[in-house]
Amino acid sequence: MERLRVDTLPQHSKSDSLSFSTVYHQRFSLQSAMGVAYSVGEVDHLYTFFVQWSPEIYTKGNKKHRFLIREKLQKRYVVVEKNKVAVINKLLTNPASHTAKNWEIITVKDSKRRLSLCSSEDSEAEEPENEVDDSLPVLGDDSQLLDDYHLKRLAAHMPARTQGYPWQLVYSTAIHGSSLKTLYRNMAGLDSPVLLVIKDMHKKVFGAFSSDPFKVSKYCYGTGETFLFSFNPEFQAYKWSGENSYFVSGNLESLQIGGGGGGFALWLDADLYHGSSFSCPTFHNASLSTQEDFIVQDLEVWTVQN
Image (cartoon, rainbow, N blue to C red):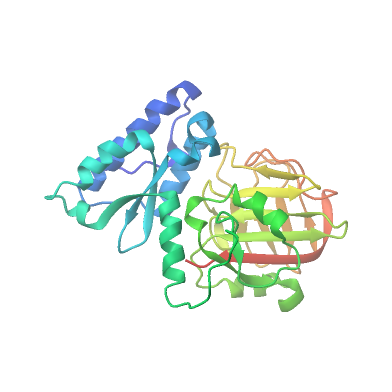
């Protein structure tokens, strides 16, 4: 059976989005019955497509109605809406189905609770008196650029698969020096999303969330999870527009995010010293930096450890 790909889908009007979503879930159920599952990247890419075309259904306001279909052994998830749970639950409760043995339906909140229980199983530390906001990313290292204000606003735009896991510092100009080669080297072997954070000489903080770790590649890579952000000083996020798939590309001379127009949404040179930011069709963003051409003061890259 042919898999759905976002970059080959025909254009749909907003009124078509609900029926298109229904078709997707039907096809997912059929493939699950055959013992085949979508990868995390495919699901998140398609989910992002739904968000662009039907925000009233898939936006944060309906978060309490979202469920996860969890593959018990492989830790893979598929996000579904409440009105689809009954159909999929019928499939998963079929004792004759091989899929039923490997998948279960849980809420997003319950998935976080399980992660919390697992992480504290061997700990004898007492529970804190005040409950901590479980949507706030936990940094495993000290950051020179991020505080709770930044994290709280970024967390609202990060995909569900990153929630509940700690973030580790994989690269910092303050620690590793200013070198794009070192940045690539530190990410070799990673298979997890990354958060790029930059502070320019005007003290402005901005960057990008990438669905894939940065690497040298002849072609663009990434999915619709990728987004840009800036604090100027108010937070502004720029999601994938759906216009093209020029998410991330990189070589030994530079790293580029977004494109298709007169310039890149974010460009960094080999020394991670000079950069530029222009509006581009990929994200329909404004320039992220104070000026289109900027000088990097500090730069950090974080990755989620799951």
